[in-house]
Structures are given as C-alpha cells and as structure tokens.
Image 1 (cartoon, rainbow, N blue to C red):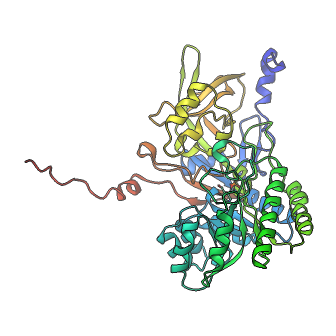
Image 2 (image 1 turned 90 degrees about the vertical axis):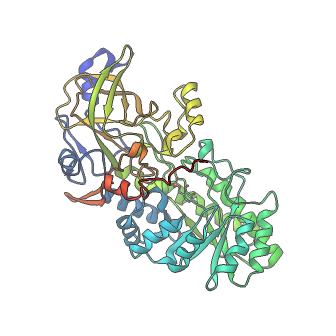
Length: 479
Ligand SMILES: Cc1ncc(COP(=O)(O)O)c(C=O)c1O
C-alpha cells in the first residue's frame, strides 16, 4: 500500500504533476486543470481543431535536433522520416541542417515537395519498387541503400547516371529490444548477412557495375535500443567488415551509417538513450576500431527518428462515456487505436498471456503493437479535485482490443465531455494511423510561441469516399 492509497488527497495532488521526461519541453500544467504546450492552451486547441487531435511542440523537436548536432559534431544526422513526415516536418529537418532517411517513393515525394534537397536524402527499404526508384531518381537522391543481392542488377540497369550506394549489412548484434523491433541479427528480413557471405558477394557485384559507386556500409540494429554498448558492438562489426573490404579490394569506403533506434521513455521510470552519451562513446569506438585495423576512419551517419519527435507530440481526446463494470471502470474516448497505435508499446510485456496471444493472432496493421500498451494519461480542462481511481481507457473503434491503457489513474469524477491528454505521441502514431472502421485520421497541429499551425488536417469522409471508385460491381453472370 502506498502513501497515496492511505491519504486520498495526496493521490489528487500527485496527479497535478507531469511525469518528468514524457511531455514536450514547453508543457505547463496546473492543478486547476490548465495544460499548455508551446504556449497554446490545449482546451482552446481541442475546441478549434476538434478531438482527437495531435499537438506537436515544434520547439521541442528543434531542441532535440540541436542536441543531436551538438552531441555528434562531424556526424551526419539523418532524421528517419518514417517516424513522422509531412512537408512542414521535412522543412523543419532541413532548417535544422539534418539529412533525411526515407524508405519509400512516397516519403521521397513528400520531402521533395517541401524542397528538401535530394542530395541529403538516403533511401532505404528491403523492397524498392520501380515507382520508389523513379521518385528517387527524379529527386536526385544522394544515396540508395542496397538491401539484397537481387537488387543490385535491377538498380544498375535503371540508374540514369552514376548512383552512390551503401550496402545494408547485418552486423549480427542483438539490440536487446522487443523481438519485433530487432533488425541487427541473422534471419530477419533486412540487410545482407556477413555470416552467409552475401555481404562480401554484394561488394564484389556492386564494384563490377560502373553505374554504381559504392560509398559505404549501413546497419540498423533495431528500435527502442537503450544500451549504447549495442551500438559499439555493431560499429566494431561494421569496421571489421570495412577492413575485410579493404583487404580484398584495396579500397577504403568513406561512409558508415549506423542507423537509428535510439530509445525514448514512454512511461514514468523508463530510460531514454542519451544522445550525449552516444556521442561520447560511439564515434570514439569507431576511431579506435579503425586504428586497430589500420583503415581510414569513415564519415559517420546516424538516423534517429523517434528520438527527435516522439516527445513533442501530445494526443488530445474527449471522454464520450464512463461505464462501471463489475470490476473495471471503462473510460471511452473519441480517439482510439487508429491514432494511438504505436509499435513503441510493443516492447512492453503484454498484460496477460491471453492478450499477447490475441495480439499475435491479429497481425494486420498496427494493432498487435498496441496490446500491453500503458499510455500515461492526464485529464485537463477543469480542476483535479476528486481522488484518483484506477480505470481502463478504451477507444471508439468497434474492436474489443481497442484498449488504450489499462490501470491508469484518473480522477474519480471523470465524466463524458472531459478532455484527456496522452504524451509521447509524436512518433509513429501518424505514420501507423489507419482509417479503421472508416474513421478519418486525426489532424496534427504544430504549437510554438503561442501560435497553432495545422500540419495535417483531419481526414474527412469525402477523402475516404474519393478512394472508393466503384459504387457497383459488374452483374453476376448466371449460367
Ligand atoms: C533503417 C532505419 N533507420 C532508422 C530508423 C529509425 O528508427 P527510430 O525511429 O527507432 O530511431 C528505422 C526504423 O525502423 C530504420 O529502419
């Protein structure tokens, strides 16, 4: 039993405080229910843009971009666009001097439409379609990361001019993250294995194509990686392979891209990966490994996505109903898994074997990722007077698995019409959002210096119907 259980008033006052490290840097809260981000009152914002919606603190993103640049001087910081992309986000990354990691022709096109210079884009993907490559060539993408042996001839046959390429190599490092987020080990779908000989064979084949210019190696060991030592292991494995390339071909590759995956805390008590610690340890480890092997030190690239945008986002939704079950109180909100599904939560253990089982069984879109999620939530917009109670927050989708948080503490008098804020919603929520049950996706609004600027508008029913091109099917033919 905690002190807060013994003294209900303490539980109330505890809920006035924001959990450290989870909210955007400019968030301010008060016990009368006030909540502002970027100097903008979230009650006002919800009234103006409707709920559910995502507020994104632009200053928070900028300050994290700068923290990375300060922590890693001389290292190229390529923002992983898959975490969240729209034109204004691409422009922000450009203004902050970042490069851009893109993984589809669509991402290339959005970034190009924002004027992001193609030369600072790096295109990834284990499958690149003709359309992806066309978008890359149209935008003059600087580097393309080759992910399989099959891709080499295809790429060499279609490049309009000499194309700089990297090879994605499997370093054989377990990042100790959730199995679904691990990409540095053998027998997963990304990259060329050193162990099977594919990576060495890829080097030979690329070097044989005059249209392709091999400039370096790439690896990405996974997402939500908390331990810097895993990056050191990956870097050492990559330097060993660089040295092997030098020994076999007599060339020194000038670039080494160590991918992204830097962990972010999603709940109180969780740890984020500190860019300053990464910056102090990893580049030095690369220099050391290169000296030991007698090769030149390559220029480093890192690709953080989540670490730059996750904490800038706050999802705002409105309570639609409160239902008291026999043992559980359900707070149903007008948002749900279509905007709050994030694979970030997949790293946490599922709440029960049954839930985990259901998660595995339902493997379409982002849903499995949601199971076991425990988003911290905060009621705002009116004074927090009532003692807190433990509730389950559910979404509006017609899916029994549309559970946003179990066992969260909210005021006992929470009622329909109240507003809830969910921190750490800036990464992968929008990119993994769906139109599940024909509900349009939520808007994203940038907030900074007291102003609110829409980045993505709400998806309307007209948007959904525009895609629905055939109101009737051909008549059935009867024999
Ligand atoms: C190649 C590559 N780089 C960077 C990232 C960004 O990861 P995160 O957002 O976890 O930093 C990913 C994510 O899947 C990736 O696949």
